[in-house]
Length: 413
Image 1: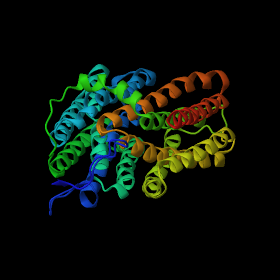
Image 2: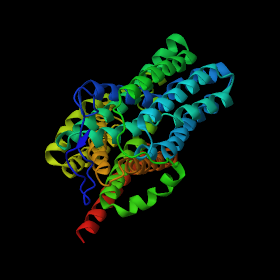
Image 3: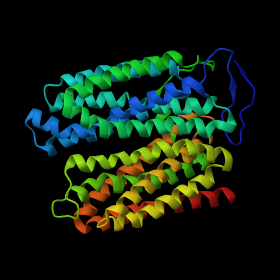
Image 4: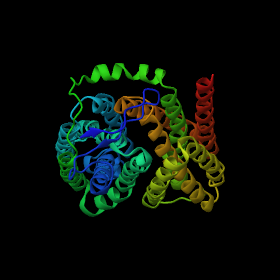
């Protein structure tokens, strides 16, 4: 394996690495498809419990609200795993790390399916989701080894897999649970996670970089300094935090609008859940976004993403009483979120010479933006109704865009 393009000290663009003949690389073809599939399967585990909460509560004799915190535990587990394992992609053997994490997640999912009560289920879900950070190990690897002129397209393929997994978990997970029970869903997810995870690990190219001791706590301690030292990384983080925050505020509270018996729709929980199919827009937009980033650059695509998201907010506001506006807003916000994700993540990955650590910083920033908006959206809905939720989304769009502008002025200055 030879390096044909040296890494730029100013841009931090990952080198283009040629593989020996006959060796699969993440640059494209069947291996890229396997990586995208692995991303979809593992990402689905984070949201697997959400559509099952009603059945879980009934099985354990708990109230729906009493089982609802399982979904929060899943997010907490993912955040823990993100901080502990994702930065190790810069130092550890990624083939071994992907295989071990897939096996751990599979065992934990089996434990979840066998759980005798909510505490045991919560512990198993926490471990499973902490090990479900495989996508954030694979995205930097793909960006690092892809040809520079096609890097965004390959990142887009993996990110599209991630969003497809999220949609599948919300929609197919609920349907499978109705047919076979919620425990069968966890068992099925365990089998898929182990099978696809180990297959991906076996197909990944061997590491040729010098092996370093992997210290997760040292890696975590270095994230703030990395964020402060790279204006490009800061811009990507702030811009995606704004987009993800707007999406989270609207999408996490949409069920309240749709299922309110005294509201304009009064849908059943199952019917409201079908709105998750709008997430498939992300799968369609992803590849196109990657092509546009490679051709026109990330800043232009981010601008388009913000335009789509900003246009969606008044449609969601009108959607408080008009279903067509709600559907149109759902299409635009998913298109904007996906375009921004591809452009901003590509920019973050090329901003430094530590792509795994930069990716961790980026995902954590987006996660903070989404979690904070979601936390405020609920109280806003209680006090001001659906317009209050739309105001939160609009505030996050404005904050993300202005934050990016301030970083751009800083770089010019």
